[in-house]
Image (cartoon, rainbow, N blue to C red; front, side):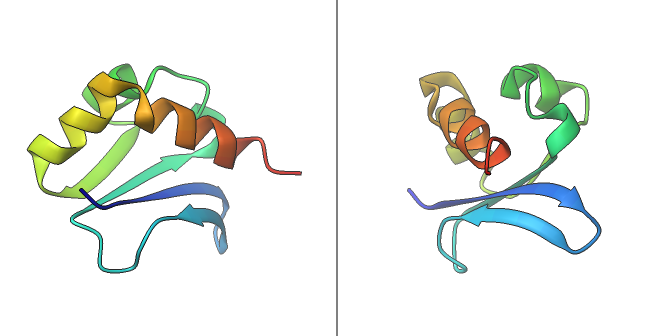
Amino acid sequence: MSIQYRVAFGKKDEAVEGPDDAEVVVRIDAKNATLDPTVAYMTGKLKAEGHTGRLLEALWSGDAAAVISRLASRP
């Protein structure tokens, strides 16, 4: 399963992890990165393109939360 995560800090300032040809691309603003990713997705603060099943697997397993947290806490 390949997922690309993008945490946006500004208009052209993003922290990115994952392959460019990922099955799912997840985007969230840094200001919302402290939210539970499942809640953020359900409230529209986390956007995703691609295979919804793969996204839900990442949300439920906690993988998405770990990666988003790491990207949002960049130096």
